[in-house]
Image 1: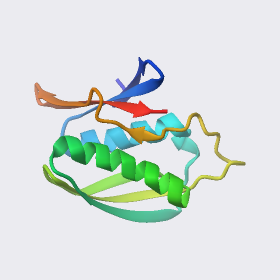
Image 2: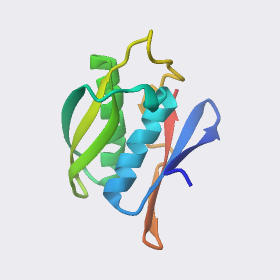
Image 3: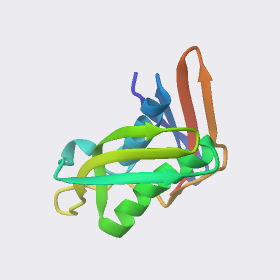
Image 4: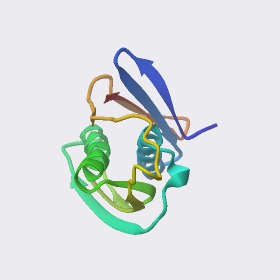
Length: 138
């Protein structure tokens, strides 16, 4: 079973991510977002970016995390192939991203995601597994 999947939602798209730990959930949500936009197999690990974010709570932190990845794409043309979360609390995340700048002649963009939204946001834990469902604005 894939650690993430998409689901249909009117004019947007939903992302459902899973993980055995909260760190794995946040990582899989990030990789699911990247997979929606470009084939991650074509990304190389030529650059490293450290991300540190804070938010009011876990829900807000997941939205901030996904939107930070979109910001890095918009501002630097960067997408991660791999991420390693080094610190995660209810309100803070620190992660190391390894990836590269997107090159239109090498990478085929699948779709443009504008933002992760709070609409329908849900993070749950059951039977030792975490799951998040988030709607992405296209």
